[in-house]
Image 1 (cartoon, rainbow, N blue to C red):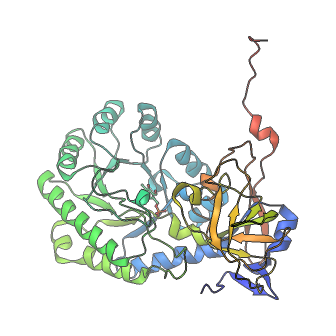
Image 2 (image 1 turned 45 degrees about the horizontal axis):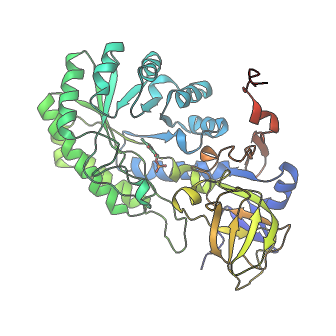
Image 3 (image 1 turned 30 degrees about the vertical axis):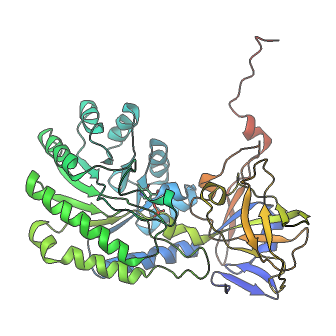
Length: 427
Ligand SMILES: Cc1ncc(COP(=O)(O)O)c(C=O)c1O
């Protein structure tokens, strides 16, 4: 049975988020509305930081911008001392704009174009290369001061098969053999500092997986250091830390992950061969997923063999359920104390059968006009949203116990036609 938990509160059957009334937020800012609690992000960051740094002091978090690229979210991470993990020049641009310095930006692209590599080189950031064919192209454009290579350590994990990025037949990373050749070439070409990287999956709740994957990466790192006669400035074990989306999932035991990985980094093999490298992580989901709820109004209920509850958010607002059947818990923010045995499907207004945000859910005695809250949408929520079916994207608000402020305006019809030109040659 799911129980309401911080920063959510049930006050007389009405939902409060970080002590702010959900219905007040909806009436003030409209729906669909992404509401982010900045305090939750801070506490997630601090949890992760202390879990690792209490075992290994050269530890750094690089927030994965792709999870939620709102400038206020980036500013918050910047103020916490985080670095930024960027997947494209546009994310690098955002990170720089908000104040991250070059030394705190990592660029992990894949299948990069020359233009993208050239942009990254100009920004003097750390470049993480995903495949050996990219390196000669990069070196033709210029020599980065720091380079790392994304290794596929041969294993992967993830809550859905599409969230497994390591192991056989994935499009990411390189083998140890290719990496050895790449480090040698980079060294010969004048690269001064090296790192090593993996990112083998997302939304992982099994703490032992991180231990297993990190041990594999360390073994590979040790071999590379010995074969290539280089020193590694940092070892980046990626992100992937999961959060409990679906009852009765339990939170990832982050203290255990931090202690296991600290042990590996302090272990005999690492200490003998590696020269106390920095330990980097680059999480997105763990830091922001549970910081945000999506408030949405029930427009219309259709009774039938399956009852459909139609809301003003859809797969255009939150894509994860349609994309990979992801589970997001939904509560009836207007009547939290109402109980009903009726199961419903919650759907949007998009002309696709996949436009179902939640299947077979009991959300009390739901009525047209009720306000629903879809939980844990801070990661890959707004950032995956689209204008499909000619829908302006939702607004985003950031709150804490004192303030609530719009951090992204709701799009308007003008945003949908922005940049378009109508040709006239067929009139
Ligand atoms: C290279 C890289 N780093 C970090 C992340 C963040 O992953 P997560 O949100 O699971 O922590 C991703 C996600 O896809 C990624 O591709």
